[in-house]
Image (cartoon, rainbow, N blue to C red; front, side, top):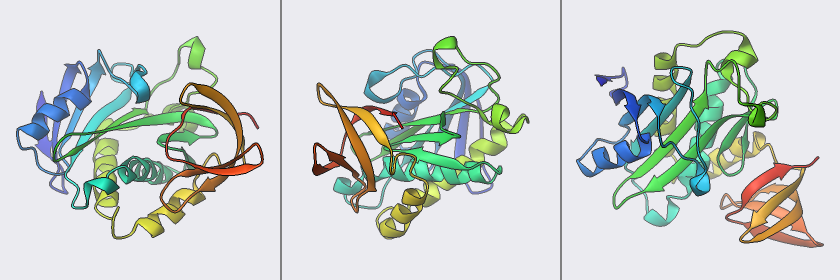
Length: 244
């Protein structure tokens, strides 16, 4: 394990192999890790996405990291952090001349293809923001080859993962610190990058698969859709797929 402090004072612990960076970060948070601290691994054996989906991160080609946040806002507002983290990642990637979008609630897309996924979990006094980002991935498994991309495939250039990690960690911590005070402003930035607005989608609501037309993102960060002639505000939905 290597460790260091970034220029912004963020402590980073980089492991060659872990089960899950979120699990390692959770233990560190319980042990008193400071706000912004980061766990990153070259390889995970049990990385996961939302709803327990498996997150595959090729060893040495992607970034799999988890950042510990200690929000200075009411716990009821913590769900905002999933959206804010997606925005922070998207804005960081824009520095690399890529037009990134956020697929509500917390995937990041480039050119309609997934480049990053975010999993947010909480414990008593901290939030763990897990990020999986395809950085220098050249090839993907056949089952996701048409829906996934990487920074390498989009730019043709390999990126320094340490530099990118520090930029992402600083961006996430900075945006999270504004999640209560500046939420309306951040929400507008998110709407500008919303990959679903105006799209026809399929999604799962509980055990039901439904079709809906996305109107946009509401003032609480909810997904506003029109379905069967009615407008609905969704705080949670799964397996969202863009149809057209």
